[in-house]
Structure formats: structure tokens, C-alpha cells
Image (cartoon, rainbow, N blue to C red):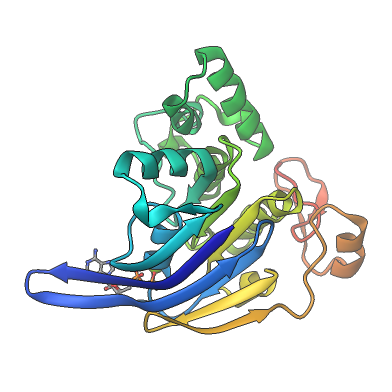
Length: 264
Ligand SMILES: Nc1ncnc2c1ncn2[C@@H]1O[C@H](COP(=O)(O)OP(=O)(O)OP(=O)(O)O)[C@@H](O)[C@H]1O
Ligand SMILES: [Mg+2]
């Protein structure tokens, strides 16, 4: 699904050149769950932006679902991105003056859908992340975790083939981060390809494959020893052993953020 060969990216500011990617080869099959790790400045976000068609490489080839992305015009690139890719950023990137619902509707506005269908899909996406009752709230009326869940809903609303997330839990506390991760795991369990950048070892360990980037190159690419079972399944429950239990502040239910997150 993703085939990148010899990706290079050079940033120029004035006379200064910086080679952020120095020849990256990466192949990701449909349905994979990949964590990208590496030190700050190693090129992770640069790589994600290229994979997400938000930016172009300076050199190299990138094929997404058989399409040679590097040969597309800007308009074609934007169309491909809007149809196939959901992107989640560390800083949420929600529009401040719009409600949660309007933020989630945004990616649908590029297509030819009726206003009613757009609203229905956006509401369904908000419901999927447990935020249907916050639809009319603005981002400033939401907690960090809720904002990120809106951002995830915005990524999901187009039913993307691939979800790319750049440090999606970087601004969240551990428990809220675990809820966001549970969302990605559920998504992956239904066949969506998930690629995420993380600094968190525990999060990386839950992926099926860990790609380590250093100085603009892939340093290692290793399959995880044993992938945790999909969230919400009996296998996950028995494997977790209740090690990360917590009580939901809203509904009082005891839940486990590894196997059955409670949205309260
Ligand atoms: N627009 C830009 N112009 C110039 N240099 C840039 C630009 N964006 C990134 N860089 C540089 O490219 C290198 C890789 O940046 P990148 O954002 O990909 O790193 P990263 O691995 O995501 O780091 P972090 O973990 O801190 O987010 C860094 O040295 C950075 O300073
Ligand atoms: Mg980054």
C-alpha cells in the first residue's frame, strides 16, 4: 500500500540546507500497525508529512495504493489525501471558531455530499470516539483528550484507508493517551492501516512493527515480539490481567484502558 524508495528531503532556509531525510526505503502493507520512533529532529514528522501527501520529497519515489504520488499535481495530491488519508497531529489542529461537529465535517466538504449526509457522517464519527454529546462545543470548551478525540473523528470521517498520527498522545496524560491509543487499535482491528509516531516506548511496543529513524535514515525495522490482542476482545482482557484498571470519573464503572476503555 505504501512503497517509498530513496526518499530524500532537503529543507532550505536562505543559504543553509538541511537534509532531513537521507534516503528512506519503507514498505507498509494494507492493515499494518506501525510505530515510528527516533530522537527529536531525526526526520519522523518530515517522513509522515510525505507519506500523508502533505509535503513532497526532494528526491525519491513514493507509491500509495499503486499511485505514483511524486508525479501528481498539487490538486491531484490534495484529492488523494482527502479521500484516502486521515492525519492526526500532536497539537490537534482544530479550528477554534468552529464546533466539534463542524471540525469533523471539514474533510467531507471537499466531496459532493448533501449537507444532511455530511452532518450524519460527522455525528457518527463523533459518536465513534464517544463525543456525540459534545458536538456543539468549541475546541476551547473541550479537554485536551476530547480535542484529540475530535481530531481522530475528523481523521476517521472520510473512512480513510490509512491513518497517520504524529505524536497523537504527546500532549495528553497517560490515561487519556491510552484512550486515544485504544481508538487506533480498534480502527486497525477493522482493517485500517495505522502508522504513528511516538516517543512512548509502551505505545510503540503495542504496534505490530517498530521502525526506528535516526539522522534521516531508517536505523532498524523490527516486528514486535507479540502484538497485544485487539482492544475489547476476551483475549485482550485475559492478557491484560487487569494491570491497568481505573475507575471512570463520570459513570463510576471500573474499566481497563488496555482492553475496554470507558468514555464516561
Ligand atoms: N520547514 C523546515 N525548514 C527547515 N528545517 C526543517 C523544517 N522542518 C524540519 N526541519 C528540520 O529537519 C529535521 C527533521 O525534522 P522533523 O520535524 O522531521 O523531526 P522529528 O523527528 O519529527 O522531531 P521531533 O521528535 O522533535 O518532532 C530537523 O533538524 C528540523 O530542524
Ligand atoms: Mg516531529
